[in-house]
Length: 500
Image (cartoon, one colour):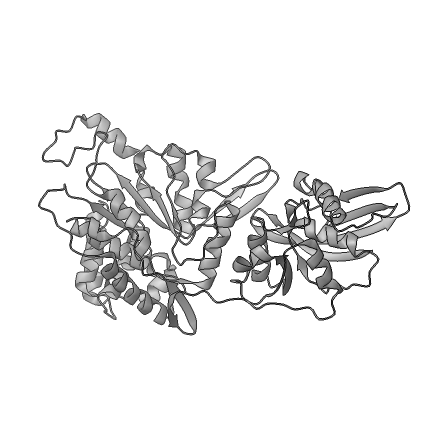
């Protein structure tokens, strides 16, 4: 019997699978057991064809491959290479040395990459359960970004066989990500200085730009309200390019989410941007499925941006279900067959018109909505949901005389300075996501500012959540202004952004 190691992806965490193989005296056949799905069962034909291309003669025996643990559902064509090696080397004196083996086989023996290989190896590396791998040569560029792994590659099945027959097995070391970076306390934070969308395109709207800068610096949730065409979506889409630098773990997590979602893997230090349409279903946004809980938009936006345009037009159930991921930064999807918890630590951006026709705030166009329609429109957003928004911005109408004022490059430089201050204070999270304990530690107020905050509480009926939001925003404004302590002007500006 031969035994080697592979793995399968259960929702989005990898589980180790032992591939056991035996040749037994019985009618010739080839069977795979152990809750293998269709893609794995089809592997038999790919393995037979690949081995035949090497002139391998199948013995007149029954070949049985068992995938252990047998009660774990397995899927993916990346098991092919392990199956073929266990058959080809069954009678050879070969030790697989705890090397994990991944790769899909072509009929001619070529070893191919799949969407599962990168997220599986990354997950195993996070769990510290993997040290050595044999992968397709075309997978190397992606896998080489994962630290702490020795990598061997092969282009075809013949090379893989020769690799295990060789006494001197050669491995390659991981590669570093090559981008500009900041180094704080021996941790590198990468960034890219290219701005595909620039705030220079946004004319006037100085308050909205200031709020965008604050939102980006501390990862604060923000709501833009204004007439159609005033630049709400323009600001939202440009915030992505001025967000704080990313460490290696965040970059790899972005790549993993993209791979699971069948997107091209990139290792650019640009955070995810997810923008579901307002007609999207609740499962597509939060995740779900009858047999297993698939990832939704809120999970795919982790460490990045989730943008809801036409905010009040989303389904009521979607809007109310948004409370948990905004508050707890996670969402639990429960099904009969599976339960999974996703991380949802994203910057939430929303945009809405002031009324159904959009002209309520306009001094040029006449609003066609009656009071009942306006009230119904506003009532779609509940108080508890709006209380989870850090920054509310009412945008001005545009004018032909409006001019650009600040570029994304200038804004990003301010974001970097604020980011450095937050990290050097010893914060594990940015200001917008800091815990209540961190608020007490890093957002201290003097007696004058305490009185101002108490006055705001009594005047505007602020909740405890609202108070914490103000303190977080004030801390970010102080960081942008390069101030060690929260000053009166910082606190007043933070209060001015609350929705009332």
